[in-house]
Length: 69
Image (cartoon, rainbow, N blue to C red):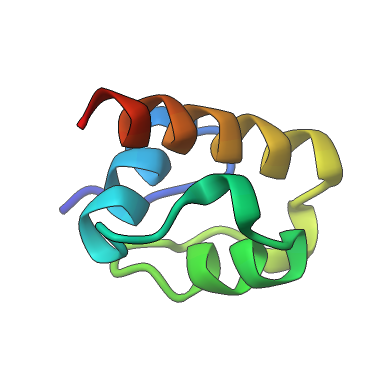
């Protein structure tokens, strides 16, 4: 698996969908989302480089994937 960074929004969203298939992304706190992202296999970016807009973009991409299921 290629390494993931905060800019890999779609890849992170897909990885979260695969790891948490029954989780509705609409109801996730950013603190939990940040933790789950940094714990993904292949995530190799600095956890401190995240911000609210990056987390929101990932959450929205994950929500799109979740709703497509």
